[in-house]
Image (cartoon, rainbow, N blue to C red):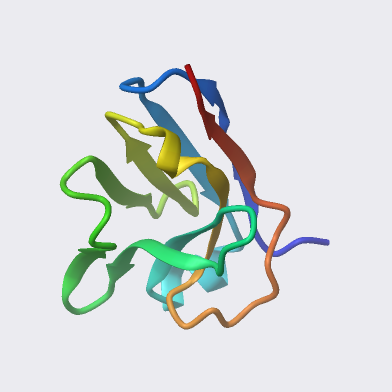
Length: 114
């Protein structure tokens, strides 16, 4: 059984938006800082955004104000609102704790193409 279940990806045109969701267990969600990561073909997995228990949020430099990370404790869910998507955002997106404590789920594919 996967620890994280990501959803919400798809094929969009440049400039469009997507909202990704990640569900996990209540114990994980309540105890840890959470994050979104992505991995494009032939590239290493990289941090997209993190929501930290003590210090708020942080984003990868490439985000440039386009994405917003949020969490809903009532649903044990993490979200990533992605606006003004560009082709270079094409990747598989994963969630995990910020410290990458657990094995990776299947992720959700985001493809941005005209």
